[in-house]
Length: 272
Image 1 (cartoon, rainbow, N blue to C red):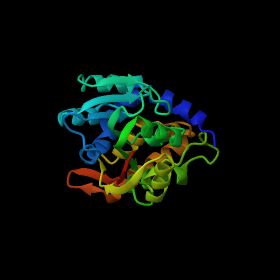
Image 2: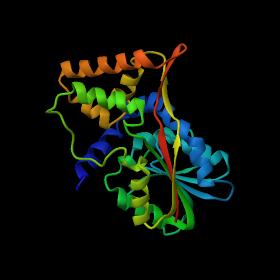
Image 3: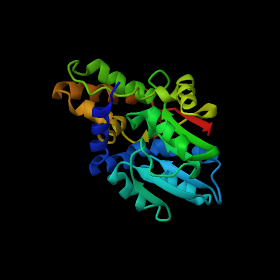
Image 4: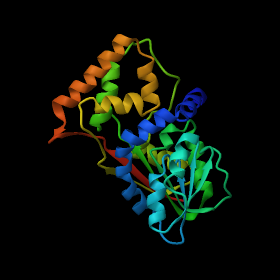
């Protein structure tokens, strides 16, 4: 299936500085919980050349630099790269397309991709590009959000949209956002791209905030796909979605004075 229209919307959405600022201030608190396991699985260290693919706001680059790696970051979003430059000056940062990497074959010892591959329209092509730019035996590590069947956060968000959204409201076709968190699917896609020794495990990430509307704000302001779907709703449906999310969080996820909603992620590694 052609996902080019989805790709255009992703590019436009993640170029919006307000969306990126909101993502960094809220959504990224959960993604950053995966940084330590990603760095460890990559084998990054002194003398290692590492590509942080879909590098986003640069928190992963910062951690890779801290263990002595020589890091290149690539992202399609100028707004994200602006964030990354403010915290990872020692890295080479490039605006580019994960589906057509501007590097020679065998350039890197490791490639990491934290929650980025699900935003790529042609994932098989991107994975083939990752394999191409890795040296033989190099390591690829990616993370992907588990779906609503395993994730309270995504179950609340998309369950509320499904229950209260206008059925006439839709977005262009897109790859299944959670498919790379399925071990069998990830192994098949990576094997087709030339990888071997594919392994999957789970990281226990979570969204944390002070008020019950925190999850609503994260998904309605700090994302692209969910935000577009919510913004396209009639006002009454939008308010019903907001109310359902707030009530679900308030009822179930108090942790002392804060609220914590689990959002597990899959960590997938493979060898070129």
